[in-house]
Length: 246
Image 1 (cartoon, rainbow, N blue to C red):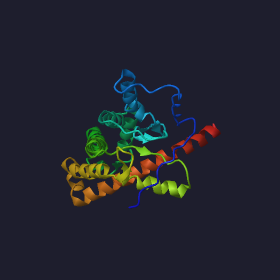
Image 2: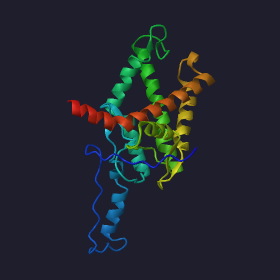
Image 3: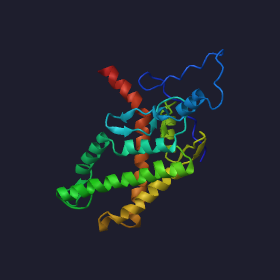
Image 4: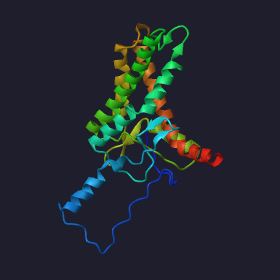
């Protein structure tokens, strides 16, 4: 697969973060290992590296792994964990998952997620969905990104034709940046998807387990990731359009 184009970030005031002005030329840099020098190093790897996130897209979908800020800063293992935890246990995201389990995952014949009818089975459905997401994201967005030195974030392209941007959103399902800012195969995220699909056979109803279920879960997860990337990519455009109307 050819490398995806390097992202050109949106510069709207609502989401962009202005770069810091360089220090005046007459100010000499602090000596190595001085308090000021250590402070600068800490700042480069501080939680400001995750400050490009809009928090939520469409007001309810957690988007802590989305970056709208210009420039690339690698995340430390601690920041990758914080990003995963914020996205997994965001109250609005959990509420959206509860609504999805109660509506989209319900059928009059099989009940909630195939577990059956009633509040208990609704709880099983909601719990299994959250467990799917948590296993996939913990392995793919945190544990293996630390081990493989890959970046779990989606960096918005923000410019170009709609077709080019759509291609970019799909490509980022399969490629990402490593901690040096180079485009690499997204082995950590894809491994997390496959692992979560396989593990889900341990807790889904008997009629929903097996190889076909595992493959279906993998493709659904990849499709949802592409949709998530697309929503993140075009949300600032949609948001600006809504603000013009209202």
